[in-house]
Length: 493
Length: 140
Image (cartoon, rainbow over all chains, first blue to last red; front, side):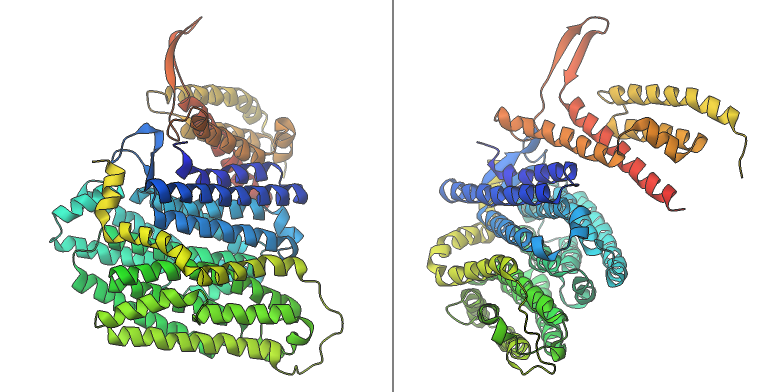
């Protein structure tokens, strides 16, 4: 089957179209969504096994040979991220049954989630810079709908901000791609990489590098460009927030990782130092937010910003070890963020508020939720042997060996801040004596808990089974460190 | 206020079909010349909007019977289906097939699966444009 890399993109597309036809029946929507998400996961697994055994898989769409047509490229990095994104979407869809509400379900919620997955998987897979823009747009348009669906006042206010920021950044994206095309004469990412290595000394490449950093930084929420994120992400309900928090910013990070290892690795003293500085500022800004807020959603949202900073620092250090750490941490962060937002959504649902000062004592009635949340918090902070540890260890160790002492120490300290902020959240919501006594009736949360807990379980397995994941990650890192592998696989030279 | 628009309505009925035929012409011209599904779809929805102006929305809705949102899904199905057809023949995704046929009346004609994809585009464009215009029009 030569079309295997297409399947994780095609299945959500077909599913979304089918869902548009059955938009009247909620039951049919749920069934189709689950079947489609599960088969996306299965197809991604098959593709991963194929990439593991046979190396990078490419599809030249419409039989136009690279670099003239659009090529889809599944290397280990992209398929790992595709698989993670598909699993998260499956869990979020299951979680949505009881939490999203009938109104949203009738208004095309499920098809839009499938379109979002299509955009995300496409962005991870495509090997064409303009096609990357197109998949970004598919993803963003779906996110516009998801942020406004339901139409509460705060959602409408935040969606204007969100759309404005993203429309501007998309405009800059097209300009930058045009710029890149005028310099290199190609849109195929492998071809661009080969061309850039011929003209690497030109300062225009550095300008382009910064331009792309701004674009992807806007999507990925790095320091001066993250201003829109806390407000916009707080507006939609928990399942949508989980999708946004775990997938959207990570697509921005993936794009930075891809372009900075494939195109812009020639002027590292400038570009990567700039990125390193921004990464540290991002961490600091995220830490301030995470410690300052007394609100479940805001604390978790600022933790996204911290993670983005850590990942960016890993990319900026740019050694084999740090890139391996970045890949480890990227996958870990996608899973754990989705899990935490789903668990946080349950806390908000049970307490009826997201304000921490009004909560307390939940551990009495919901012990399983409490301990799962604590486990996820430890995973987020990177306590061994949980999943955040190995990635952060590699990033920090390579930071020290490269002489980036300040950066490595900031990353280390940020783990402490992360731990403090989430454990504080746990203490306030679960441990503290509530101001008003809790109602005796226990809310039914089983159908919410299972998908969230399975993500936590996945994260624990990912942490404990690091040895098993290691060969996969190292195969991904090899492609990133040696762009020739990628170029040869695409251009078949 | 009730305006007397007999002339407008009479002409609109005729012009509607002229626009539709021109749209179909453009749609098929798109095979090798300027034209295609997008502009054909825009013209067709232009024709429907003309009818909406001449009569009113309720009459048009009764006349067309189908929900325009349904057209979007149908069009997407055509386009995605054409692209996915390549999976069955195990050729790279989106690969099209074409050949020349001797048809009665038309003579030597080139038939291309890209036409099916374009038909999907045509339907999606009509569906999206009409849904937008209806939504704006109804909110008055």
